[in-house]
Length: 447
Image (cartoon, rainbow, N blue to C red; front, side, top):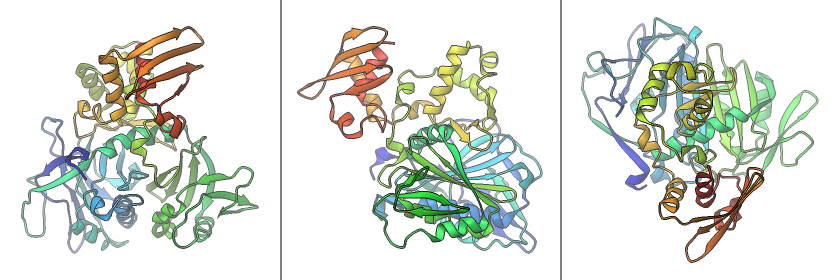
């Protein structure tokens, strides 16, 4: 993995879980390059269902350390979930090494005791010692969670402060954009109780699965089948769902959500006070970070003043309201519709499948960093800067353009908002993985 694929952060101390006779205390080390004034901690309180939280966090750690298309050497660097606190929720998020599996743990208000100190988002350190300690948490444990950098209050077993360098994958930042976009378009297709869920997962074949499987229902029974049926849902890389198996005996129910064009499928596991979500891409070789579903929205950057107003309005993880946004930040409705789309494309908005609402996450790095991560986006801007886009036709129904390529000129046609290009990217993916740099440049030019 090259240095361009990661952002290096320095942690002032390791994350720890301290065991004592009467309680277990979890302290998560954080880092942010976005300065915050006098915020030593986002949350400090007890969790009422420690065993479920611990098992869910271990399952999330298993998602992060899993790999389906990259090498073991590459996966060793990817182990840092993102944690967002606020609006009565604590959310832990993470991707598999290949970025084709997204996991999230939501601890709801009824699963918490004591109060929030502040809202915020940070990238946290899940070191092996903490994972080992989480595995020791029992159903009778008391669990105290501290999220944030509280150097004077963090306690370790040997009272030792360790400086730890941890890489943050750029592919996670890009993956957050595509995942929330797919989730916001997904619909619930099934609800299963505990026994139905266990029976369903027993139908997953052993070993490596090379072909698509389908979620089907006969009578009151769900199963995975290699044969498509009416109203069945295609699942690529079915073996990825085995990540959920350790949690199934503990759940109350499972809901399944599918993207209308089968770009993703989500399994949401429910406990009394915790929800665990797993979303997988259409195929095991497809990472969410490479989909580029909202690249057009990133062509125009958001100014720092607007982002500052937005941060003050959203208070990090508050439920995001596009309706109230124009009043609070002084923009008209058309501008805020575009702004909402841009925030989604930058990964600053997450999506909750149950409430059908966005939530705001203040990522622990500057927005300007996000805007430079996608090569297609940078390629489109370069084409415009060098004046390599020629508009041939531009009327209400159709746009035609010639765009310079490497030793060739590509034809771009946009009709009824559907774009086609003669380049290799479009030929290979047919628009399924976002638009090519040539189409992006044409759309920007004709705005």
